[in-house]
Length: 171
Image (spheres, rainbow, N blue to C red):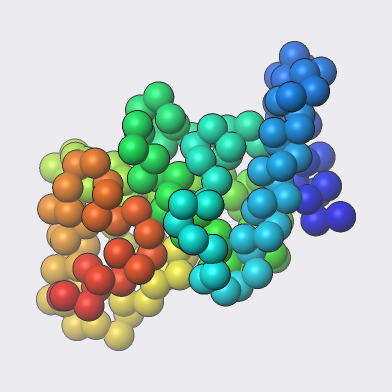
């Protein structure tokens, strides 16, 4: 039933040709089921089994810079999967909520790729992903926010919540 909710959202957003294409519709259904499985509130899914950028796109998510065409190593999709693996269903039970998380993942990836021009990150951004830096001093928070910008343009150093936690712990 939960996967059907996401699939119904996707069907309303996908191009008609994709809805009529059995393989594409099945891909969307499979991704919806995988997201439901991920969203159990526990970090219990191996990185190698997380959905790919193409999987998320099949569900009508607008991948932005995390698309397979622009993020060949899949770091954006990996970070989104890591975030979803720690969320509970009510936090990700619509395409709108998933898109909001994806947009935030792209903000992190953009900051890593082009820190001089990308939008600045905030403690709230970390909190939304599931990491709390509010207990850190202002200087420590500044160091954490700067660390994302110096983590490497490919996003590999921030492609999961444990890797982001490592940046936090080093601050």
